[in-house]
Image 1 (spheres, rainbow, N blue to C red):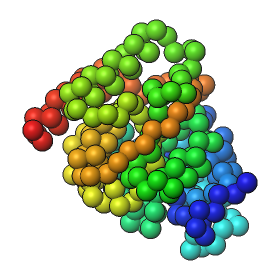
Image 2 (tube, helix red, strand yellow):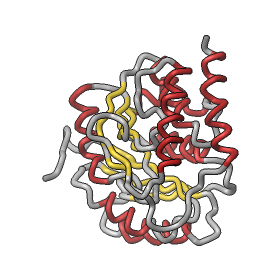
Image 3 (cartoon, rainbow, N blue to C red):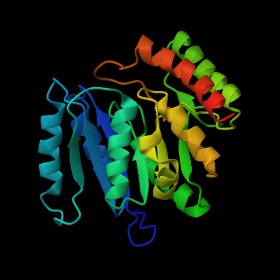
Amino acid sequence: MTYDLGAGTAVTVVMPTYNEAANLPRMAEAVLQLPLNGLHLKIVDDSSPDGTGRIAEELAEKYNADAPAWQPRMSVLHRTEKDGLGRAYVAGMSAAVDEGAEYVVQMDADGSHPVEAVPRMLGTAVASGVGLVVGSRYVEGGSLDEDWGAHRVLLSRFANRYARTVLGTKIRDITAGFNLWSAQTLRDVDLRSLDSAGYSFQVELKYKAVRAGHSAVEIPIRFEERTEGVSKMTLRTQLESAVVPVRLRLKHK
């Protein structure tokens, strides 16, 4: 079944990469096989030393071979340094909106986010008119891979509860990295005004979107463990995630 959603709603999936050479080919194929007219995949590579950027260019050449020049299926944005997931997303999402995307999807390149949920997220956004759809691990029906250890599960749940409590938001999975945004929501937030460089970008963007008057809907997903490569989460990003909610609350008190 192909989701037309009004003559092909322009949707761009923004996928940041750093050393994801082992995962990118299958992820690109999975995304570009989705039954969505108007779908585009934008890779944002932070000069990966493992050749991810080169592989992304080769994939773009392959998938654009039969696409019209005015509507390529895939593009690659190369950045010259690795300065945080948040900065990579700002670059990619800003470019997507400037290029005419009506909706922008955030998705990891490691296979943890279920690609098949994207049409459901888009359908929810179009039908309800909300500015944000969250692929949520913590609403009814959502789940985590069994390979997650008890420590990681507790840390993730604590981080969400902590951020929700400090910020006073009802979004249950406010740290989620699998989200679909309307272009208007991203314009109202002004992506370039965001301060967070790391994973706390997810919290800051959702918080500011809600403050700007946009509603959010959460749909359940199953979050899988990556099968290739290593996690990019560091102590520094964890500390940033603890500080950002307090800073946001004080700034907007």
